[in-house]
Structures are given as structure tokens and as C-alpha cells.
Amino acid sequence: MSLIHVRKKLLTLETIYHEGGPARADPILMGSIVAVVNNPYAGRYVEDLTELVEAAKVLAKELVPELLNAMGGAERIQAYGKGAIVGVNGELEHGAIWHEAGGWSMRANLPKAKSIVPTSKVVAAAGMRLPIPMHNIEAAYVRSHFSTMDVGVIDGPRPNECLYALVMSTGGRVHERLGGLRVDQISVGDGQR
Image (cartoon, rainbow, N blue to C red; front, side, top):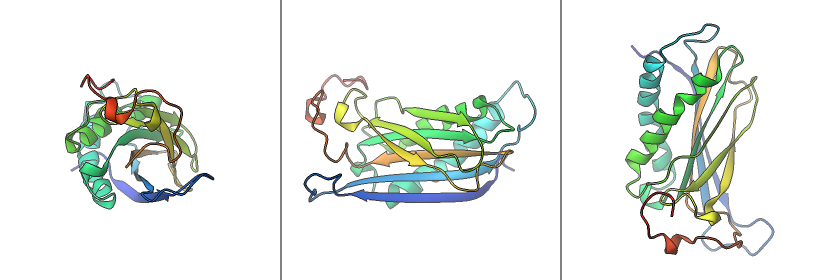
């Protein structure tokens, strides 16, 4: 029996045509999947968080395929990120367990992924919106793909819950034009350049 249980999931897709500039013929698709779960360690200090990490890995392995399917498959994904909101009876480490669980699960399903999965986390009350950073899956320094996606649910996380989120995008910012390393210039293969 799993240590964590899902109270609700939220799958969100955004199709972005423009932000005031010319409309794109191929809009950017951004997606997030959020799971609000019980926090088995809320209100108490637990030294060894291994069991929570393992339970979160199982959760992430369920969430990643669902998000990829909604976004049209792994081959379309160019950017990703992850994040966690811990209810006020928890601690930031209960969100940090998502680094391994969420990050490795996304990378395992994205054959081109080499760059680290950026993250944000916070301890907060229900209704908090969390901007989750994203960057290119192959090279973290591709400036056009530095972006964020906002996630949250109005009734969570409750004090004894955690919200775990994964975000992905099919491209960079819709009107990116500030230069830097381009996707077609990725050459080093080290996850950075």
C-alpha cells in the first residue's frame, strides 16, 4: 500500500498563439499535471524521507505518461520543469523529494533530455499559485526556452497535503527574440550547451 494517496489531479493545457505580436501558425503548447496528495509526515519531523521519495516515484511514473499523451507525445516536448507546494503543516524537504521523483521520471520518458529539470517549491496555504521555471530539455542554456508555467488549485494543498506538479512545453516563448544559444546550435551534448 502506498504511503501517499491522490485526492485530486489537474491536467491543464495552454495553446499560445501570440502575446500581442504576430500570431504563430504553429502555436506553443504548454501543459501541466498536478497531483494533490496527503502528506504522511505533516506535523512531525521524520529523519529518513526515503519511503516518501519512493512513493513519489510511483506517482510521477503515472503522471508523466498522462501529460505526454495530452501533449501529443514525447517527440514534441522541448522544455520542462517541476515544482511542489507543501501545506503549512509540512516542511520544504517534503517538496524537495520531488526533485528526484519528478525529474528522473520526466527524463526517462524523453529520449533527448539531458539538461537538469528546473524546479521551484514552497510551503504555503491552500490556493497558492506557483510559477514553475522551464528550460530546454537538451541544453539548459538555450535562452529562448527560459519560461514559466503557473500551477495551483484553489482548495489545496490543505495543511496536511502536498501538491506535486510537472510542466512541459512544445517550444520556447511565443515571441522570443533576445538571442543567445539557439536550439539548432546545441552541440556539446552535456545538458548545458
